[in-house]
Length: 187
Image 1: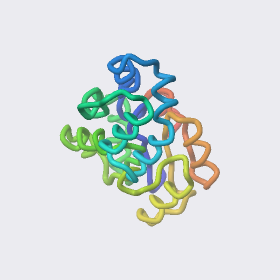
Image 2 (image 1 turned 135 degrees about the vertical axis):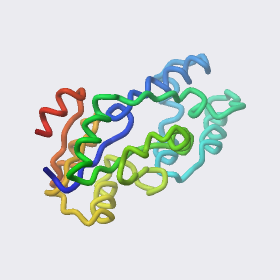
Image 3 (image 1 turned 180 degrees about the vertical axis):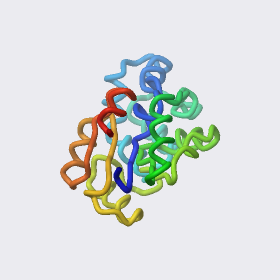
């Protein structure tokens, strides 16, 4: 058992569906076009340097598509992964388990309203921290706040780049595939 387990939220603890696909369809553009138009602003949004409203204003300036409502929240409908939730609940009996997630305010607020984050001992959200994965500072911030050495922590994420970044800092890092595989990998 490690002292600290850090779980990513989307794609690990929850299956969020593809918000990008829903937004792209709503705007009648391809996912690639949306990503191309939004790329520079997505990082600023996930690090809390701009609001969702500012994001959509900037998106309008580059796309010409007027957005009259906040689409990230409108199309966000996460579902908890029961298998992963069970793993978190088991780990909490002997260790500290926190959520370390790249998120944006509309998704964060929806999860707060639903109680999704209550599963964890604490929450580290990129838009509040001002730092997003895969930056090393994201992991260093959590370790410092939790007062845990990297060697005493496990990080679980579905993004290989985030897993690699955590591993480079000395955390045991696991690429999430599914709950059954994770249960075996944690041991």
